[in-house]
Length: 467
Image (cartoon, rainbow, N blue to C red; front, side):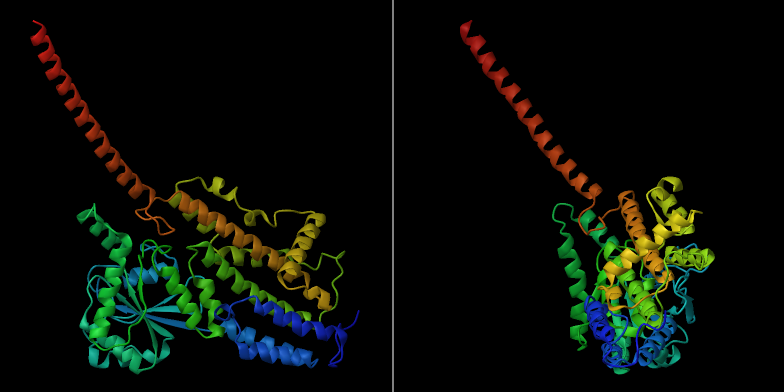
């Protein structure tokens, strides 16, 4: 078979292709798209005019830009603020790991240190010395840290708010860079507040007091109020960390969102879904680039599928979504469950464990079904894709679902002082109920003693009268 499309604008199939492209990207909110509105419009225009070569060229270029987009994030704060812990949390590495940022109560960052994300190589977090530390005085701090190379700054504060942090915020604003103000260790503040005021403790009131303290400080210094994110480095799914991630995604240029989305920790199902949607857009664009000039694949021939390449792609997604063997061992240890028991709940580790061609055919058909349902009926336009893309969609879909299963299993087995949905955890609620029950029981015991005493007194009087 020859080329499916001609380069004439009157081609019948080309009429459906632009609308299918437009319809697909309308499914995503503007702040989650990995290509800009300008690029989207450029591709649509070329497809409408039948310029398939031009559309192919635009898609090829934008894929290269997205894949190679570098993200440099500066993280700064005073000693003991938790900035190194935040860097480790964002990189999903433990404090004891060889590549982890050094954590300490005294200033451990005396020079600028880059930390590459272990799974997204183009994302680098820079651990900057706190402003005012030796060799990094406030008057030339931004020049010393080479502020121009960072996409944005994260200012980390806890528990005290200093003039240095206000000065840094002013300087960043003057340099027309974005910054995000993060207050860490709020879990410790809540615990201390509850201990000191057990009967009057109000979680939301305490969080608002912490937030307003910082906002008032900005107002008094005549600085536009930033959004203050309250987080715990030990419990990223709680408090404002998910909101911080959504804000960073929205503020980044479209071409940089993909790599950042792939880096976010699997802290909630919503985070996994965002990562999934980004990867799906990238696969879809890659498939469309190749499909513009592809011929229809004959389903009876499967031996052109390289099993080694398929395994490599499956392992890539498993690693990206944290369901690779190494990650599963770590999760099983933290959840105190056998690794075999955890893997039994998953599908991706066994997705390519077969030898028969018929099984591969079934897998390919599943991939085609997922691709067709997810992409607005692109097959109806006459646009055909290689079998690898159908399977890649199936890999992505399976791995993302496994990541959600692992998340539920890990959270179910990991108790904490505050629940992952932001409500009081079982332990906190249980303590309050137990205290209430003890008060009631104490009251009942007191009434019982009083009643016995009352009967004895009255019974004594009756006996004395009869005698």
